[in-house]
Length: 449
Figure 1: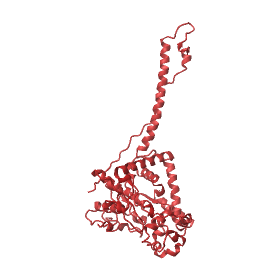
Figure 2 (figure 1 turned 60 degrees about the vertical axis):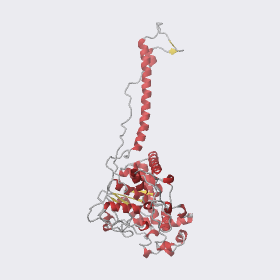
Figure 3 (figure 1 turned 30 degrees about the horizontal axis):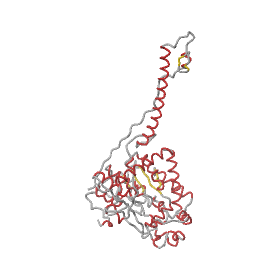
Figure 4 (figure 1 turned 180 degrees about the vertical axis):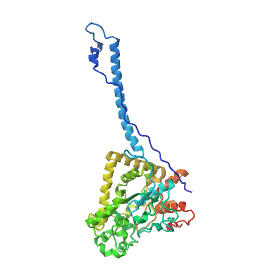
């Protein structure tokens, strides 16, 4: 039985101000002494006498003051370094009001955008903090996708008024989402460069989408997309054109007119407090952690649902330009929120602070990889993964990779590591069994369950 762990939030103390030396500064010692020292010998006064005890005391006092000033300066510098380090260690950031971690969260899980990695973060947080998740009802593995979301797609929606976390695939429909989630819910999503999102979708959904099935390659598809793509088969072809735009609830076949695009982007901005960017995932997670007031380990994650290099197509500059044109609505959405992310990072963190936070995140990921993963964390194809519960789903022509855990882990560490690498279908089924123990378990066909 895999263990259920509960974590608590601890805040590091803040350093309080700078070190200040309140001693008065020394005066002009020479004028006060009325004498000078040369060749290592004390000079005589006008009366021909050596300096007396009072003069010697003043000299000693002078050197003591100098030493105290040097010590104060050293302490000031040390305090500055410690303050900088402490800012990196605390989960609360400067200028942000303290408060409890955010626990009511809606994540719009877009397709082929590193969203499976983010989903794992949210599943782990829900499990370790005993939060409720809006999971697909019955035997479903998504929340009604590709149809617009309805509250009845959620298991237990009638008996439980609200859930803490919603993060499975759905097509966004705000009025229905609000029937499931509390009023203070934090909404966020993730986008990816549409060129590479489309390339990934072509491989992943090659045998599902009619527009992709008939095309021998993505180059051929984009050279003449209307040969393969039929607007009337939208629900089967949602992955073939402006898929991220579709996930936000908009029409993927709409004309890319300026007024229409601006209005839809403004809708997204009004509802979603944050939009992550897959190409800058670590920077995005730093900002997400700041907004949610979470601990570092809550946002550390390994790459999940990634493909082998052999299943990634190399695209020519011409094909890339065609992809941007074909998915013009996605491109406008991506461009806008990529700029928005970096503006937020500059305003809230600044370059130096951001670099430090990203490095802390990556360092912790390396530590957990050393602790949990075999072969230095090398990704494995599904035939090499020993534990069938950790084998990812293999769709279309994609070669989806996963991990092997180090043998000999103690039970507590094993539970932590299993959650970090668990594929989304298996994790969804696990949470469903924990949350609804009285209901039949989810069937994951490729596991033989």
